[in-house]
Image (cartoon, rainbow, N blue to C red; front, top):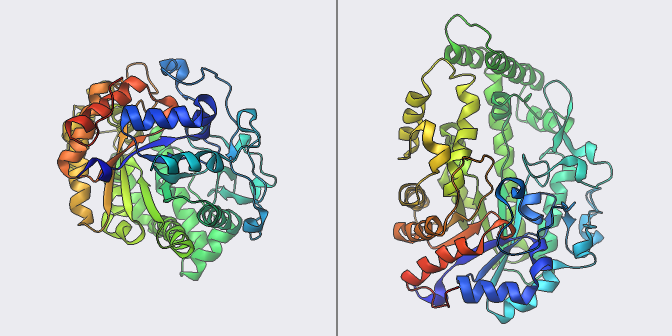
Length: 476
């Protein structure tokens, strides 16, 4: 692979353009770090996508950009085009943040990326708001927003939008078409990170979504919606009782299997919901290709897909090759011990509460093909680039069988949530990049957001590229 063929991307929010200026930022990317692909957030309410470092209270500020804790409200950082949004009431969502008032972020950036030969992909993440830790429905200034929110098994309106609500789904369709028809971009990077109904039940939330739109769609597929709602609710009740320490005769795990056995409609509902999620991915892929077959559709793939056997079974790679040109498996190595802990702690507190955590996690790691630290050390050590990043790159490449390209999602200062959580270093980034290419990956994408990255850690990635002969830029 020559220097001209490299694919080294970075996820960037609009606030970094406002804070540092387009040309100085792009010059730094190309000359110091060997970054030649921009994954640019254009529409979001998530602080991780459009704001500054979300973990600054714990980690301090990075070594660049403005040190301003005022949160951005978010929205669209493009000039509005109402004609694209006539099939949805969500037609007025322009960001009103002063730092970017009146700026179309793509119009501001694209002339300069073109002059430097850089590629630009739009970074779109679903859910568009109310993502745990850095996004909330309350800050989204869209009139009548409750009309598109999910309904749980108790009949309550939740804080997340329903993917089957026509207004929300049509809005996502329009959003993609608007980008593809009106800007000289290279494609879309789509991220779909949603908890399924059973996922929700296991972390203490009532299963979703039982709005009239989901109910009508499920009924057409022959699902008895009322029985599915009662069954899903029964799963939630058992999980909730186990979490509070309720005694059960045959142990927590058997009790959980029993509620599934007695309520098979919960599994039918789970499958219905997940398949509708996949259908949205396919629809967006089709819209991109309809607008311009040369545009690429990439999948930014949740690390929970390889941290949980259930989710791994739901989202096989061979299916995803049918609606993507490339994939980016998220392997934010230093943060991943904490993410793995967040994934398994609720299960260890409920359905697996009677079992030895170390034995459970050793079995889980074996099933998932992970060769990492023991349960009690994972948060503090993170996951090792030479085993974790390399292994995920190798396994992904083997699974997709040359049907698409693989760009590994290397973490650079992915936000920590605990003071004892592993800290990113230049060597971690360096070894992650080297491990990605050693496994055969076609490139790397630094994430989750440039505004939260330390430049000294990005230097580690640049050093790896120099060692690989893919970059000859200057050192810092």
